[in-house]
Structures are given as C-alpha cells and as structure tokens.
Length: 209
Ligand SMILES: C[S@@+](CC[C@H](N)C(=O)[O-])C[C@H]1O[C@@H](n2cnc3c(N)ncnc32)[C@H](O)[C@@H]1O
Image 1 (spheres, rainbow, N blue to C red):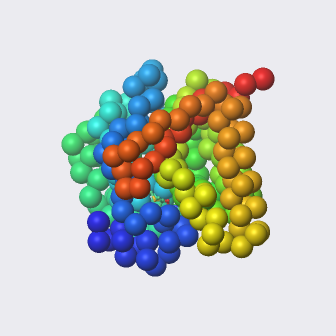
Image 2: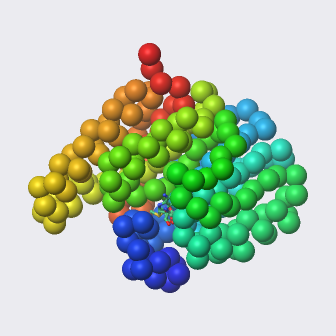
Image 3: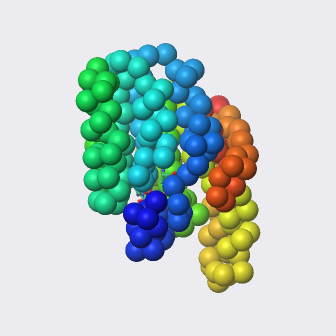
C-alpha cells in the first residue's frame, strides 16, 4: 500500500490511482475468465502490485498462461517477487510472467482469451489510448473479452482543473470509449465498493459489423 502510494506520488500520470483496486473491482474485472474454454491465454496490462493478478491466478487452471505487462520497475519487481514466483512454485503446470515495459513495446503472444486492463486512460493523450486499444483488441481471440475500468465521474471532475484543450481531450476520450463499447458489444457494471467507485467495462473481442 505504501509502495503503491509512493509510486503514485512519483508519477501520478502513469499510475492514475493512489491505492490498489478493491477485491470487488478485481472480481468484476476477471468475471469473463470463467466462460472461456481452456487452456486459456490471459493478458494483464498495468498490473501494479497485483490487485487483479491475484484474482486471475486464483481462477487459472493447469495449462493456462498469464502474461502481465507493467511499465514501472518497482511494481513489476514486487509483482514477480510477491505474486508470480510463489504462484509458479505452487502451480508448476501454469505459466505466468511479467514484462517490465510499456504495453506498446511488449512482446505479446496472443491470441488472448481474456485481457484485463488497469491503465488510467483519462490521464493519457487520446492517440496513446487509441493505439493501446488497437494493440489489445488486435491481440485477442475473437470470442474473448477485454475488461478495463474507469473511476465514476472522473472526466467531469477534472473539467474545472484543466484548460479548454484538456476539456476537449477528455470529451474525445469519452467519445472514443463509448464508441468502442458500442462497436464491441460492451456493457459496464458499477462497483461501489472501491475507492473511488468505479465502472468495470467489458468488451467482446469481435467487433460488430
Ligand atoms: C491505476 S494503476 C492499476 C494497478 C492495478 N491493476 C490495480 O488495479 O490496483 C495503473 C497501472 O498501469 C501501469 N501503466 C501505466 N502506463 C502503462 C503502460 N503504457 N504499459 C503498461 N503499464 C502501464 C502503471 O504503472 C500502474 O501500475
């Protein structure tokens, strides 16, 4: 928790949160793991210290593989030492590894049946968000699911603190996320038991024609 906070203070734009996500949000983020046939490939983007990773690992079965991608070295190192290495020792027939790099540079080995994404898109330039969704959706199985989250009301909350160009960027972000949700047969769930409350958003791998 303290490690998470100090990394957030060091780089809030990239971290996008001051505390790890709650168990309630984590459960919602991995809900589609259970409707995928095995063996499954899972991609987690922006793992942090492993709030979602632990739930993914606990739902995995022998033969499944998890690729986690985390840009921050302190987070990636903590994830490997505290979460992935103990899991490999306990479940040698399951694979899990972390790539410490931005998702834009990760050596992905899809297609993935589930993509769980914890990135703080509202802090990113629009083009970066667009290209990250392209990478994630492009590496998915067409019957797979992509789950990401966003804090409730975050864009309107930021409006008074950013200039006109910042407001335009936030509006464009909202429009992009709404378009993706529509095109990929998506839906969202409200998770009140999180600080702050959040939407988990779930997109199907295949786009509607
Ligand atoms: C909001 S935190 C979520 C952490 C964790 N999944 C959770 O929910 O508690 C966002 C995480 O994304 C990571 N991150 C930011 N940009 C990234 C990128 N381009 N590629 C991979 N990870 C990134 C940050 O370092 C941070 O750990």
